[in-house]
Image (cartoon, rainbow, N blue to C red; front, side, top):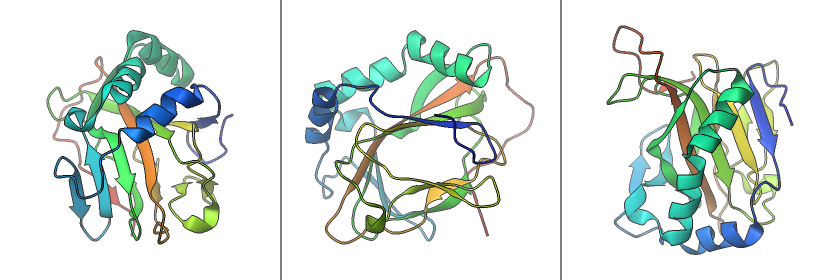
Length: 204
């Protein structure tokens, strides 16, 4: 389903087997596990990010699938790009416990090693029966009103990255709940613009 949010974005349900995603959920480390990178900044309080060191076999299989040439071609076709390459710098496992929030922002726009332009975010949510009142909903801020997406189990959100693709989950996660997702990012190897690019830009 295409989303009317002011920039190219889509949400899909039911693309992955529930058993596969349940196995991924079971592999998420506890919040106190030292393998997590935990953010305590003003704009991204208590967000946790886990790279390959956190992944078990089910998570590894799903992430390799999402980064495969097949998925890269499908995502490229969706946004009208010629060629994309997937990566997990800053991606992989994401976990947000009680009180965690991520303010509205646009992402860093270059791959830190290659300088390729970041073109697409892919987010796969892993939360059974999530309710909007629990907070943690994805908000896309490209139009007159934000589009709010509940991070429901198996929901896949894909959107094009630009200096106008404002997004976040600014409402903190409610007590007693943990929001989990997988993230992969896609880059254009034919687009390496001059200049340093920019890091995350937070909305005032």
